[in-house]
Image 1 (tube, rainbow, N blue to C red):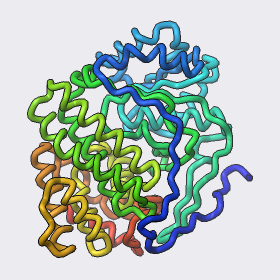
Image 2 (spheres, rainbow, N blue to C red):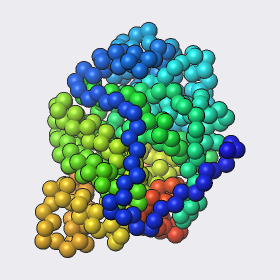
Image 3 (cartoon, rainbow, N blue to C red):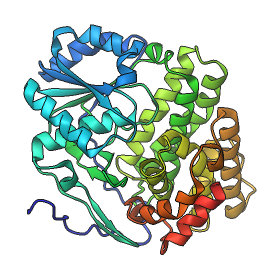
Length: 407
């Protein structure tokens, strides 16, 4: 296949039959327990790795979690690349790939939030496929043409020690901002992180506010997975379990930030959410949030915290049954409710979760320039999330109205 050309178009039925299954489970080891970081060397050697590139941001490199990881890995670390910034970037990825080549690595370790994991996976793409990272992005042509880019080469193993609840380390996908401020999206099952270390004791060092906002991102994975055009019985079961865990654990962690068990719950729920979208994929909510980050410079957690109930309302008419299941998973008794009433009850429960989690709820409170909303809406029209969304989006004006409601 010629480099830079999109792959064949992905086709989906307008209504996904309820019991169809097309599900992929990548090879992945997850260790979630207090002190899990100490188990990293043995787990890494079991994979057969000896020369690792540590990938992180400058602030993460100063953190207690990074120190624990660096001390545990010892001479397994061949080099460190600490240039990661929020939403990453194409030039940053290419520089990281150069560092990886110079160090002759055989694996990557991402320490930090979603941008660290996405950067490590993007470096793995460049090392395997060659060329510039931008050549390997998928293509979406609104309103309903999606061309996933096929990436054929084997990838170096990626290991992750997440410090947020983004679940970026779980999925085979990633997003990178290009020089024009657009989010480029990639997908390859061979990118799925081989080893994930979730250490709730170390996570206590991460501010509860950061964990709460990124956990709302995880919650959104589960919510969108329920009504995705790629939903299936496996992803639905995972989504409902993740919703229940996060609905309980996020407010508990905010109330008692030093309690390891609450941190464990948030990390577990976030991991489950990543399993959901590794197959079901996300919709308009994440499409908008990608562009709020890439063009509006909002953190992904903040964007997710604000936009979720508005995206749920946007899809309510075509996804009332699924939103009723969300309500049930959040503890709402829907047995006597009509489908629309149950859907509204689910959205109301999400709004209550926002309040209990003490996360941002309006775009106007973030410092975002309102004049950017039309451009953000226009960029959203090129995001593949619209392809997987149950309601088709025909114009940027529909997205702009959604953003104005969140303003």
